[in-house]
Amino acid sequence: MISLLKPYLDLIRVGNCLIAAFGVLIGYLVAMHSFVFNLQILLAMISAFLICGAGQSINDYFDLEVDRKKKIKKPILEFNLNPKTVFMFSIALFVLGSVIAFFTNTITFAIAVAFSILLIVYSAFFSKIKYLGNWIVALGTSFTLIYGASLVGNYSVVLWFALLALFANVYRELVKDMEDLDADKGIKKTMPMLVGIKNTKYLSVFILLLAFVFSYVPFLQNLTNFYYLLAVTFANLIFIYSILQMGNNNFKKAQQLSKIAMLFGLISFLVSII
Image 1 (cartoon, rainbow, N blue to C red):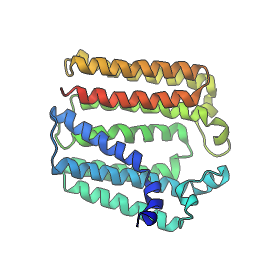
Image 2: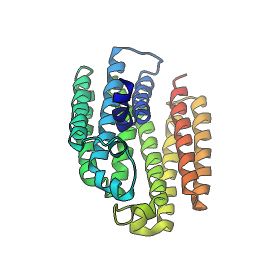
Image 3: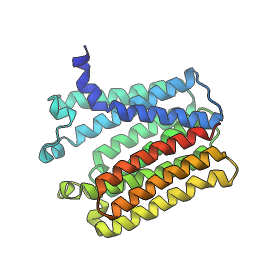
Image 4: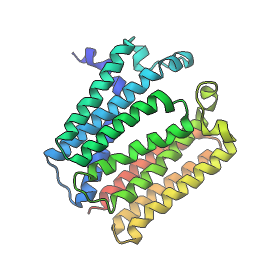
């Protein structure tokens, strides 16, 4: 049974889906300003998990020929899956995720449908135009927080956290584009191809500085506590180390550090509830 499910579990990138579900939970907890759990948030988390998985799966479907050329063994190639089956599997997950969201509330359902459509459009048209696609990917990540908050209807803190997550994720996407510059040539259009590595570095730093600014606004507005200030500052210090690595053209290390920094960013969101 597990061997039969493995290709599809690999296809949806379970780890990424769990992070999406966790983002929804954090958005909900921050909006509630309390550590609570109920059926409504469980349904929203399952919905986000499924829609994220559908996005990963359908992206592999549309990237099939590119991955063949680059000799990247993604699950659809590694397990020799039927592309039509993968496409229908993706659509089924989008529909199921949206239907589950329907049983939470109207706003959550609307977000689920909107992002299902956006992820399909992204995979079909924008995944190869990465200087635009980067923002769509980052928006999807940051919106998991708003998705969770939509169950409560309280966005006063979550909006700032979502903006922080948006710019931090765009930074990471740009660093990844610099790392993959040679591999993407002739296949995708990325920011380093448009403006060069040097200017992309400047842009990345500017975008991350915006994230730094947004990270302190909630504290300055007395919306968060001192624990949040400490945790988010620690995350920002890791981001600064990431910038230094990027400046030395160590893009792989810079990207790894940005992931660690974002993890501590999520922790800072949680401790703001204490």
